[in-house]
Amino acid sequence: MSSLIQAAGWPIWPLILCSVLALAFIIERLFQLREHKVIPPRTLELAVEISRHGHAPEETILMLEKNGVLGPVLASGLRCLRNNPAASDEDIRAHMEMAGRLAGQQLARYLTALGTIASAAPLLGLLGTVIGMIEIFAAQTAGSSQPAQLAYGISVALYNTAFGLVVAIPSLMFWRYFRTRVDNMLLSMEVASEQFARHLTQLRH
Image (cartoon, rainbow, N blue to C red; front, side):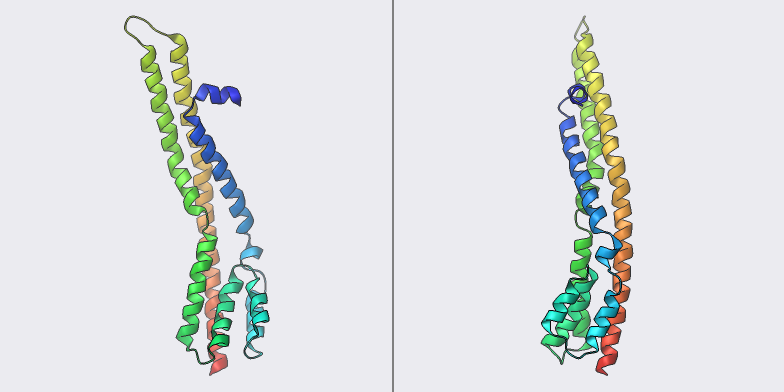
């Protein structure tokens, strides 16, 4: 590994940093975006059951909030009713929509950074390529040639180009995978929230 870094030159260090960050983001999102952590089974049923017993106490609402990412969204509707029993249906939906936006932000955490790495890594590899080309031209002085410097310039250009693509391709693939997964989860949460909002409306009328 040390010989590869030496052959690639200093331009590879930003790419190594990008690779470490991308790997950390990917592992963290793989762990956090599991279905049972975001939308635990029977979360909607639990919220419906709680709502049928009248105004839920704070302890019960806090228990519901611990059910993944969906729990706080549904709990926001119950808390709105608890704090203001005369709240309109629009007020309840507004509270749940705000909680849903916060949940969406939580699900999309680090995805912007991962997408930035996917876009920046090829450019960093291109920068290393340009620096390697400069080394090659510097080796071709008037009337003489320096084979060692020429070989170093070629290795800098090729290693940085290859490593930039090695970092960018998996980062882009995982970014697209996570974006699709987040969109699907947000849709499922939106459907569950709409069902719960309608249920609260029916209970009050």
